[in-house]
Length: 413
Image (cartoon, rainbow, N blue to C red; front, side, top):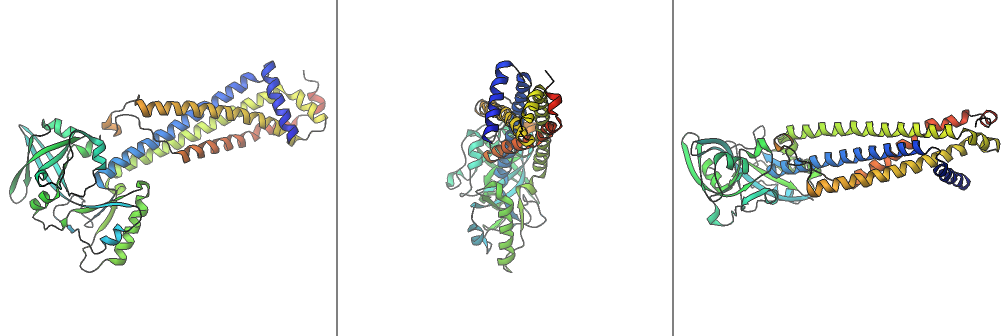
């Protein structure tokens, strides 16, 4: 084995000095580098989209919602109670960040000649504002633990621009039912989440105000949001909640359904699944291109070294040993190409992450710029998988060695 490694290194040095195989090696190495760049960018950008959109969906819905079965989570006609007998057990589930009830009511905002239908979501003093802290662009977040802030609301930037309402100004909202009710709120802050179909009608208000409008008791709510600490384990957490409900629900508890963000926003997650498929196609194509370019490069090297292969065979070296010599050289080319590809890819990703060079239309892509998220486990797995797959493909041209005859190859100059 050590002799084979020594010969491989010697071939590399001699090839670099006399130009043998340099062009094919360079082309093969560049091909591997370009393929790695494309694959790393595809994975990081795909994960970036999934991360950003999942965070937005969970920011609006809480991740997991308990509500009346078969009824929309924004209902104001079929409430559930917030003091379910098994809520203490749900809160004890490992990984639960917060549990927060909410109440909804649809209404109409009127400002001058502009009219817009909206959905008011009432939240309480213990509401988690983490998502809106990142999205707020003007004003402040309401503080519903302060009695002076009970009339404050939060609007999206699209809605505030559409209606011509600024921070600190009054907002007139009408609620249509058996009777038309009018309420005046104060705009405390403006957020921008870039989810066009949601935030243009979404308004945050005080839960007590919504409960009064709906004529509900203090424990009656539209639903209960449950936010897990690990957003990637929402389905597992939802199953744990379902098990608790089936085991510990009592007769006095109303029937509730357990929904996840995937159930609430299927169009968003279907789009992400389609993106995953596109990334898979890109990975397969890039590994195939890199593999076959390495095959052609190794074949060129083999043709250039036919006389040397014949000499080694005449000296008694087995085919397996000669295979290893050329595979070692191919591995050097692959590793250099992969290293170069990784360096360039991470530079590009860091630049996009830091300076947001490539922008997008949020109406179509839900974000203002190409998002980047680096999952080191995926990156390492991709590098190892690509390396092993290309090496396996290189066994195809290396089998050419067994067909070389020493007596004929030594006559080739």
